[in-house]
Image (tube, rainbow over all chains, first blue to last red; front, side, top):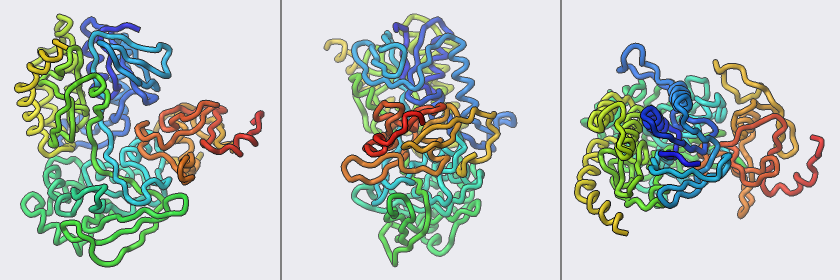
Amino acid sequence: MIVDVVIIGAGPSGLSAAIEVAQHGLTAAVIDEYYRPGGRLLGQHYEDPNAPPDDKVWDGKKVADELARKAEDLGVHLFTNVTAWSVSGKWKVELTGASVKSVEAKAMLLATGSIEKALPLPGWTLPGTISIGAAQTFTNLHHIAVGKKVMIVGVDPLSLSVMMEMKNTGIDVVGMVLPPDTPAIGHGHSPARTLERLSDVAGLAPNPLLRTVGKFSLTRFPRLVAHALRFNFLKVNGVPLQLRKVATEIEGNGKVEGITLQSVTIDGKITGEPEHVEVDTVCLSAGLYPMVDLAQTAGCPMVDVPELGGTVPLHGPDMSTPVEGLYVAGNITGIEGAKVTIAQGQLAGISMLASFGKSGSLSVQEAKENVNKARDISPLRFMPDIEKGRLKMEEIWKEEGVYERRNHLQV
Amino acid sequence: MNAYRLDSSEKKREPIEFYFNNKKLSGYDGEPIAVSLLANGIQTIRTCEVTGEGRGVFCGIGHCYECRAEVDGVANVRTCLTPNHQGTKVISPRSFTIRETLNDDS
């Protein structure tokens, strides 16, 4: 199949980009491994009290269905349950599971999203241990209880939201604890560090839990709060948030049957005796990082920007990369919420249209401003210093982008 | 219909019967196979080729490959991504004895 634009990833950014280019005369194909379009939108369901009255409930599945229907109505070829296993040339994407073997296009947009960081506790391979993202998808999309008694390891905006969602459906979440400080997991999850991170997002968060956490004067005294929490269970929705305990091991004979907890100092050093809690399911949450494999395969230079969530493809403010005809949008460029990635997808679409000599529904500048607006009204914030990360990338782009592009064309 | 199903307002879906290691189970047409299995309380989908330990769904979106199984004769299918249908036969990898005793008319 030959199209103008091939897009990998049918999440919010990929679908928005497809709609934009298809509305303005380009042909497009979107490829996604999942069996239905929407990406991470599919698991999202929450209330945003700061949103306008008719926009308070964010029903990700509904948003996904609307985007997908719009794209299909515009004639976008939507491949689901299809794996893009290779990209080469300018551009050829090899597929498995589709009626066609490959898609060729002049422009390629990578909207591959993010992956969950691993949390390799002893016992984490036992059936019954799942990632927090899986728990979200199973709860909100498939309406399946992931277990009868669930412990969540890792306290962050995503795990807090999923805890609320699981509780709302009646699943017994027995608690939330922190990951331990180990060589494999690192030092980033101590009570003090966790509370510092939560303090950055609490004020902006939509759910009552984060707001409650925010009331603990977190912004000013995270370490003091960490000390105080030693004796106080912070309970929200009836779920104890045990910010001074870590999970040291997941146990069970063939499947999850329990978890070992230990108290820690505010800096994460273990104190006291281990404590055993019976659970049948453990959800692990260690945050997300951009999924950049295909950008690397396509020859795009990578830049490590911790404020964006890790290593991301070098890209300009218009979502183009130093590689001719290669664009990026969504969480591959940094971890943010769906409202931002939808705006990024439209921006990438407009940039691609420009490369074909066509104009889109907005100017590149207007679309860029829309991304910033979406960020300002986003209820969930994953990276506290995201703006700083975006500025950093713009600076690096200014310094390297032109050089890289020229360099690449010479090859 | 299954112990782990949560109440949902989702429109009625087509109930199906499918097979996991030769055992007849119920699910809904079009949902991922891993979801149908979890609805039946099944967390262990395969055994590790190296250690023989059980493995099940981990990431739920096709990244980790922990939930793979043989589906209708095709090996290493990720059950978290693959829609279930009436009569689908799912077999744990390495369950050779189970495959040998598979009843063809099942």
